[in-house]
Amino acid sequence: MVLATGSQPIVPPIKGVELKEGSREFEATLENLQFVKLYQNSADVIERLEKPGIERVAVVGGGYIGVELAEAFQRKGKEVVLVDIADTVMGAYYDRDFTAMMNKNLEDNGVKLALGQAVQAIEGDGKVERLVTDKETFDVDMVMMCVGFRYDNARDDVSYIALASNAVRTGIVAAHNACGHELEGVGVQGSNGISIFGLNMVSTGLTEERANQAGYNAAVASFNDLQNAVSLVAKWYHVKTCQWVSTCSHLQS
Image (cartoon, rainbow, N blue to C red; front, side, top):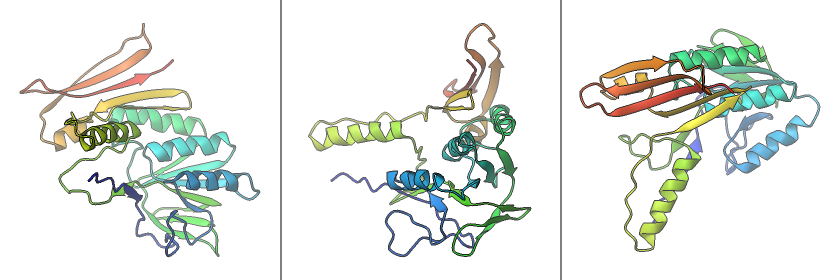
């Protein structure tokens, strides 16, 4: 038996955020309130953007998906606000010096950041009209919910890294074992990369903050290399064991 139950987008307890009963495609009761999980969801968003009346978009969630969607909407000529309860974007993947670069990059390219704000309600008469946080109210025509996923049948003591590359690797391991060839997964480092408005960033392993939370006595080293494409690199090591914990690089072509 191969257990591959997948994940579901998180539906936060926010007033106005509800899914239609029985919907298997994460369709919201409020028009133009969008979740992005399936191909059908993305196709629906693209179709709606071609219609008149969608000029102001709010993206809720400053992770990979939220940041990439904010860029895409801005490039389509939309007025974009990115909202997150955290005080920086992409904090799960990069440390402060790197996320500060991305924050500035988004703002320099016309994306309004509403960080450190908790969304309290999505309002409208049948369709999205306003997004209300604990600090501001934004008049918007569409809201994208990108606050993460919950994993079906997940164990509390397992750290999941939701990347397609990891899914492919674990699928290969499962297929080998199902066919009678014993193969043990070696684990993953969470290596990932992103390019937003020409700012290229990659990371692998844990951030310094997460390393400390995991009990590592993390030390930080950094250097600038202006002769190559890599202009900033930071590495973390477990001081006692010299185990490699993480590397983050800012790549600017």
